[in-house]
Image 1 (tube, rainbow, N blue to C red):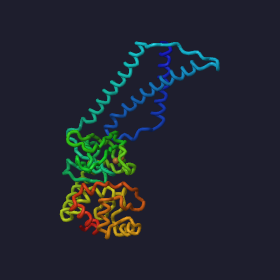
Image 2 (cartoon, rainbow, N blue to C red):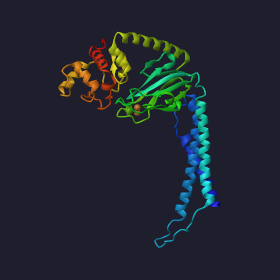
Image 3 (tube, helix red, strand yellow):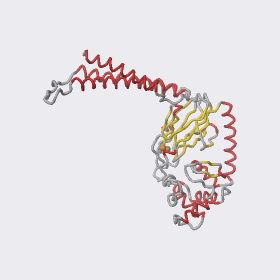
Image 4 (cartoon, rainbow, N blue to C red):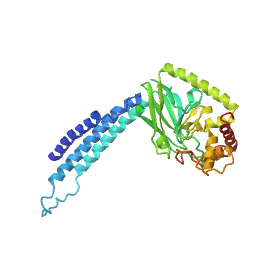
Length: 363
Ligand code: CUA
């Protein structure tokens, strides 16, 4: 018993030194950028301390045993005393983890509850995670969509719903899981295919620091997973946000008007092409896939490489939408572009989109 108490005492000191070293010497944590990360930070620290103390006790007891019961010479073949069960020890080693887990469980529940404290009147934004970009739909502000980043006001709680598009049960229109993580905000939430309505993944954030942050997808979602991180999370002052919101609303209204007379552009916008492709007429600047600004040159390159069966540019564009792996533009990896557009878009939508791209955006 005395020995066990010694292990605990030495292990605790050892663990506390390790914790102090890892917490104060190495700067692990990102800058605190939200009320949620402020809530979670002390919990992280406490879990780190407890984990290192347990690690310390185990390592000290193990180190002592290795030294104490070592073999003393080649003729030392002694065996240890046989033991069988120890009720007190079993009760103690069950009770201690139970108390630790229950304590952190309760603390974690309090943190999650406080993170939602201001959810009631929060502005609702739906985050659409798809291969391989995030899109943001401003549900509380008329439902316009942006794929050039998330803009939110400082010191105001925002509700973030996570969804994936394209999923229709029983069809091949299957998106995969993605996850929205902004380290400075201390929040992370999965966008899971096939989940909708009340069970949709939802999280809340109350940004406290103006600036631009990076979002990273944290679910291995395919060959483009590594490209799915963007430094386009903008926290603006309340006044700057109001200006941005008015401008975004006007741009959305203009785009809607333009789309009415240009069905191909409407398809381009709703199918999310701009998330991965640069196309100047659509004002898109995506970099994951090749630029669509000069498809005649692309067609000639594909033809020279013997990689397309298409007779003309229009046929080539259609082939690239329906069967994207037929020809891969130089410098891009195969398999990046979803193969689902042939089924998720109607044939009229595909024809409109082809015409729009072929004519350089004039539909
Ligand atoms: Cu999306 Cu990883």
